[in-house]
Image (cartoon, rainbow, N blue to C red; front, side, top):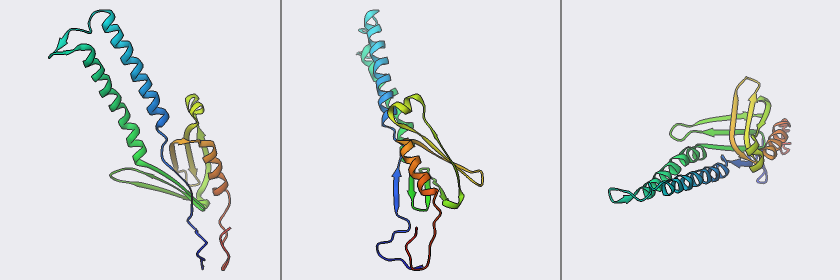
Amino acid sequence: MSTTPNQQPSATLWTGRPWILPSAVARTILIFVLATVVVWLEFTFGAALPAIFGVPIWTLTLLLFLVVWLVSLIPLLLLRSSNRYMLRRGSIEVKTGIASTKNFVLSTSGFSDLEVTQSVIGRIVNSGDITIHTQSDRTATMKMVKDPNRVASQIRETMGHPIVRIEGEPPR
């Protein structure tokens, strides 16, 4: 097959990574509210001002909540850095992993079914998971996709059309 400079058989139509912002904001708000309530209770019951190693207990409480917040963000950051999704004209690719990676490439001929899963919160923030099933009973899940219905529509449109190539003509 000959290609002209304008043709890009493997042109990327969409790329994405897990959209962790809504979860990170929710965790931040939860930690902030809990820290505020605990510090308020410490002051209410007179337990905030005694010091341990010269540091007031309310300060140690805030430091503890800061550490809990940072630790709660680690799984989200690992998820974002370890997953990448690419939709091309004739295939979809799901890459996972950091140290060792796994590539799941699905061509048009192997595409079987597509499932979009959104929780109530996911519908509010327009985020969800897309699960792709193959004819060989394998699945690939794209987690925390921003605007999953739009992306699923793009996948269906792209994967629903078989690639037909005629010598000397661009792919259809």
